[in-house]
Every structure is written in C-alpha cells, then in structure tokens.
Image (tube, rainbow, N blue to C red; front, side):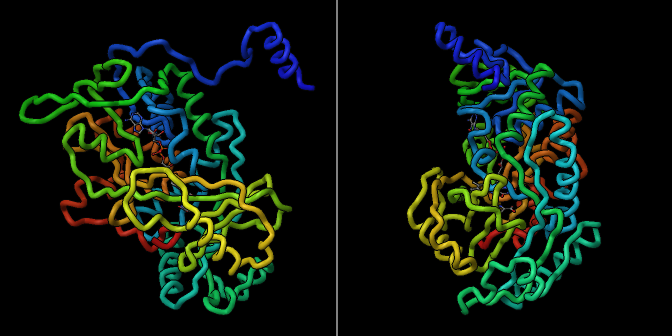
Length: 421
Ligand code: FAD
Ligand code: PYC
C-alpha cells in the first residue's frame, strides 16, 4: 500500500482531515487590486495566466472561476488535437499549438497522457473528397502532414470498419493527418493552474463575475474594476475566457458579437480491449470516436440543432450516435455506454475563434471556441498573454479579431470543423 494512502488513513482516523498537499493555494479573500484579472479558469484562462507570469513577468494576476477549475468545456471535451485546418491563418495557428503540446508535460512535470494516434476524416461524397484535397494542399503548403488516402488505405488501416457503412454511405477516401492526438483534459487545466499558482497567480474558485465597471477616458471606454459575488477588484486589464458564457460577459461591457450558444454532447463506453488506434471522424454520419489508454471509446456527434444555454444531456443523442457508430463498427453492438454529458459551445458564423483587443480599452477577448478550442489551449495562452502584456494583438491572432464580422472579413473554417454542423 502506498505510504501516502497509509498517512491519509492514519490522519483520517485521528480526525485531522486530508493531509495531501493541495495543487493550488486557497485564499480567504480577494485582493483589492490586480494588474490583470482573468475571468474563467478553463484551460484558456489558466494558460494565459501561466504564460503572463512565466514569459512576461506579470504575476499580479487573479483568475476568477464561478464553478471549479476545469469544470467548463475544458473538462467536458473529447480532447482531439490536430492542425489539419482549411485557412492559412488557421493552419499556422493550430500548427503552433501542436508544436507547443510536445513540451507541455515536461514543462508541468505532469503526465498529460498526450498520445499521437493519427486522424482520419472520412469522405462519403465527392464534395467531401474535394474539400479534403483542398485541406491537404493548404496543410502541406504550411508544412503540416496531411494527405488524401483512398478507400483501400482506410480499410487497411481500419480492418474493423464497415467501409460501406451498411451499404448506404460508402467511404470514398479520407484526409489522413498523422499528428492527430488526444490528451487528458483535466491534467491540462491542473498543469497550467499549478504552474500559475507557483508563480504567484491567485486562482479563486466559486467566484462569479457579476459585472465589469468601465469609465470614459479621453473619448474611449476603459476597464476600471470587476465586481464578483465575493467583492470587487480594481484593475485596468480584464481577459474574458468564459466560452459558453461569453455573451453575458460582453453584455457587462456593452459589446455585441454574433456568437450563438449550442449544447455539444458526448458519451463514453465501458472499457474494451484496445482495437482502435487512430481517431476517426465522419462529418457526413455526424460521428467521431477515439479510444483512450484505459480502453473507453470516447464518442461525439454534431451540435444540438438549436440555441440553448444549458449542459443537459438527451437520450436522442445517445440513440442517434449509437446508430451511426454501429453503421461504421457493427461489432460494437454489445458494448455499453456508461456516461454522457454536454458543454456549451460558443459558435461563430465562420467557425473561427474571436481573439484579441476590443473596443473597450483593457478588455481582451478569448472566445468563439465552439467545438474546437481544446487543441488551441497552449497557443491561446501564449498569444493572449502576449496580447494582454503588450496591449497589442499578437500577429498569429490578427485574422480572429471581433471586428472582422463588422468588416465582412470572415476567416471561413467550416470545411475543417470536426463534425458536421
Ligand atoms: P471553459 O473550459 O469552458 O472555461 C470557461 C470557464 O469560465 C468555465 O469554467 C466557467 O465556469 C467560467 N465562467 C463562466 N462565466 C463566468 C463568470 N461570470 N465568472 C467566473 N467564471 C465564469 N475542442 C477540441 O479542440 N477538440 C475536441 O475534441 C473537442 N471536443 C469537444 C467536445 C465537447 C462535448 C465540448 C463541449 C467541446 C469540445 N471542444 C473540443 C471544444 C473545447 O472544449 C472548448 O473550446 C475549450 O475547452 C474552451 O476552453 P475555455 O478555457 O475557453 O473554456
Ligand atoms: O476540433 O477536432 C475537433 C473536434 C472533434 C470533436 C469535437 N471537436
């Protein structure tokens, strides 16, 4: 029996509580002021805090989280990491993220279970195959390993798959992306949180931001303070990284965006023997699946088809997704689904994120991450921390500014969205 378990049992017997060291410092009250306040302790907010402290020497940072650390979309996602996007801006951005992922476990001294698997996006129609070819060409141009493979290659790599899809949607080919990977989502939040905490960043859980005070200064509006259920913090800089709650935060500073919130559901099976190495996505069948190191199948589909600010799950989803899974993998019919959940996806019209400075001085936005933001956690932390520290948009995020919608300069990434929407 490990020594720590014995110590825990012994201390509990003596009524001394839990002797384990905590990963984060618990603070009794909020500070009155901070150089930077970050709203949202998901991966994005915590990564920005970490790099602000580590790379920019800004340690007077407070992260406010209304629930618990990593309890938003970060702890609910299906952890697919890839850079096989469609636009040059997207490919460069996500490729930098995949590069950053490689050193992260070492940086944190924490096992993130990062596992490179290869990623197949199946094409069931000629139109889908054309999009795959375009993506492969753009990817290769920017040094990202993606190639179109034919149906025989898919069958060789995935002998367990019925590539006829029960005869009604045969696989014609696929986009194969060798760097496609999965990782452990909770550990990513813990690693960034622990690293930020060790550098003096204060993380306050169960602390909800209820308002953002602004003032007029030389004809511009600028941030003055945030108001929470536990008090007020004066600050000149607020980074908003609240995913599905972004419209509420934008209301607080009088900004508008085209974001709409849709539930995105997922489910997981009981553990089964390892049989699926790569990650499989079929946009046409609305299904994607990977197998974890523990043997569970992690499965998802497209968004719920209506706007809803809730994380409820539905039986419809399990039924529909199971039917599509069985079209691809009929031998799974006896495997049990053990859990399902949902997150709130903040969707943009062009399927690209919204990042950077806004019309309110000192209010920075990291949002619009919809169904695709987990993989971007490291690069978002890097680019948003630089943007906040220098009060200038990092060059890698220029295509993602909020004003692109008003200027009709969209960054059309829909063709690279993971699942059909
Ligand atoms: P979050 O992790 O949601 O963090 C935001 C935090 O802000 C939350 O903890 C919330 O409680 C807090 N908050 C909100 N309002 C307030 C307030 N007023 N005051 C204080 N705190 C507040 N992406 C991929 O790349 N690959 C995938 O395979 C993938 N699969 C997904 C599957 C599902 C089912 C879902 C739902 C999403 C998936 N995504 C995927 C998308 C990805 O999960 C998100 O884009 C990403 O996690 C966003 O991280 P975040 O830190 O911005 O947001
Ligand atoms: O962004 O690759 C992705 C993804 C897969 C499932 C949900 N998002």
